[in-house]
Image (cartoon, rainbow, N blue to C red):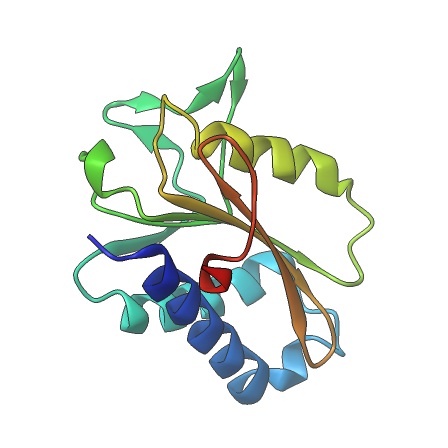
Length: 148
């Protein structure tokens, strides 16, 4: 299993690649799905022993749910069908999105909680040439894993 620090570093490297290799996407306000698809590709290179899926909403054979609402994370790094290998759940928002961020953060709290057991959750706010990450672990907001 990856350490929290290793997970954070892998996400940083993938985001750096996105910002350098796909820099044209952000000023053009390309769709969030296109941006997350590219980020997922870079994450796969960082986590070769795991699957990286975009909008993966399964928990075994059943859909992921919070109360009765379907949960569809933007990106997950995991081993399909093995809750003990759920590494990272991501919600990504580009700077131009007017969507309420609190819904994404609640989703990450659920995904890192006791039912789905993602080791870490990350809410990524993409800016023109940088990003801000808010971390979640154990169902609550957490500090940056690299801060010890």
